[in-house]
Image (tube, rainbow, N blue to C red):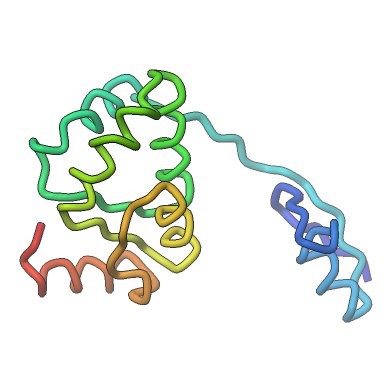
Length: 135
């Protein structure tokens, strides 16, 4: 049976979209149709705020795109060295929360320690944060 899969193609370690592969195992022939586009907004404003951790109690990453926004700010504004030498350490002194393990993994790659990855969704993460009174 043919099905429409409404997402962008992503390759796994086997060089194939995991949805295509898994659906194929069950006799389904999936056709990928990318239906979304994405644009980052307010990067200059975010970059400025990212440079001043002293003004904030912490960070909350709600998705892998949020991590990508940090990476873009560091690259575009040549802040990679400042990140490595002081900004990362200053942010790590604060609470850094994440929704989900995939986001946690990406946040860890930019050198930040995370909390809340096991919460799994925004509602549970909010409860976790409020229960800790750290932010």
